[in-house]
Length: 110
Length: 114
Image (cartoon, rainbow over all chains, first blue to last red; front, side):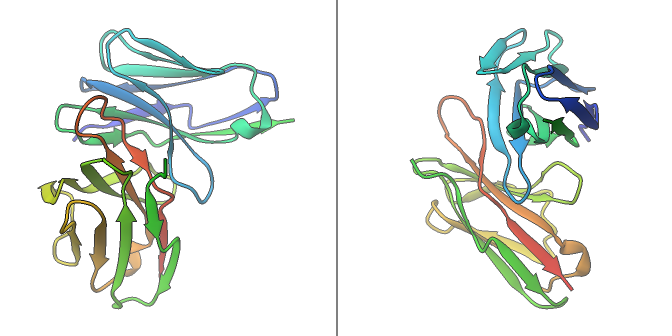
């Protein structure tokens, strides 16, 4: 089945630093989504990408849909303590099924 | 606008007992999904509904799991009987039939089977 490779698995950074994480796939996707999940909560949608090459920002977050349609990255600029959480990428094909990565656990030290 | 609502938030049961989870999607969202999330993993789809029709239930363990969405709005996911390996977070999500199909998740139900 389809699998997503999300990296890094975890990150420990200082407040104010920039963060970059990415997802790669052996399959082509039509949509890439990035979610953040806090402990005890469901995933919250951060950014949705619908077109190859698309670059979209949401505040300090920027994500891009790779031109090969097999990858995507998420950047967080000037990290703050509330950025702590697990970030998931998810790819969606025409079947509507979302395939999730295993997540990147972000820790921000004040 | 209210988000996806799920209940209960937490459930502890003994193995072989039945359990049910309820979900109310975002108003106007025709598509509803049930996911299971194991510890340290991303969510995995169990079943997808378009209105009241289950259009993808290929990942649902049908020997013990069942789901319904009788009126095409809220939905119930049931496990009977529960096994130790069913301990996980059960997430409900919804999306709009038209326009961008981004999925919005509820807070989940955390199930512990003892």
